[in-house]
Length: 325
Image 1: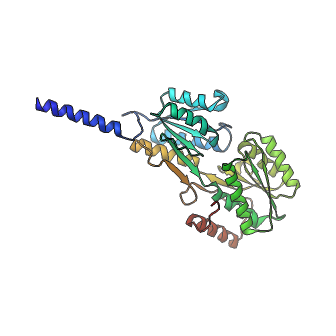
Image 2: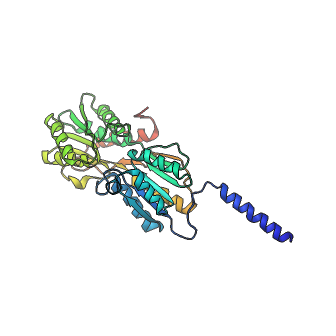
Image 3: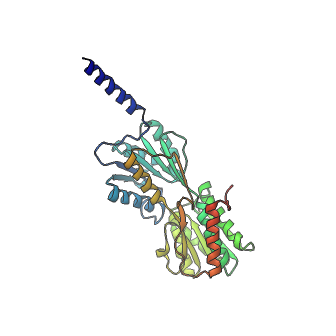
């Protein structure tokens, strides 16, 4: 009888301990299921959404997870897409992009037992984990290249929407240009759209007509249009998020790499191995290998310029250069 009582008490104790754990509920002896709601431009943006999808594909191939995804063109709203991903039984729901935050928080409040990962914004909700990046740091390095190499002393920045996230790209780029060439003029225009390549072409034409010989777009598919126009016009450009050299191999000097795929893969790997995500708020910059530059192509830096760029990168990683206070 005593053994039965002791076994019963032990079982109750284990249930209590399990109930108090902050680990994410994942299936035992089965694959982890991940759902992702892609950013507004969806697959084929050659940038943000494609990177997130690549991270999941790698996790599927190397970590034996399964995943499902939704695009806004199919669900019409982020909220509906997130709800669908909940109902298909995913263990972690990922939302790509700052635009999804409001709808994700609505769903996260409705399903407090579910766990969410928000990429590119920060939520205070306890069941929403956040990954953000120091885009300004790698953008600073691109600006430094433009400041060093511009022949006209005019360069351009094209933003998608005029929101704090995209302003980080602009501030970093402008600061980098000015650090190497205080006399240079930086033309800035926000398209108000991340998915319009023709609009990007038009904005780039305006800037090139105003003598801009380097253009840095942080504007999704709109930015692809700006890059294409730069190549047609014989001027230089920079890519964003992923290495976009292949888009315009006579124009794209380098790209600001935003390691969305790596951040997603690493988070899923931790979840698979430990059953939890340890950091509520991941903030990834050069020091954390969250942002970096693609190889420099099309033009060459002198040895002095290359040394200067490396020194700037070291100073940013070490904290002696702070771009946004």
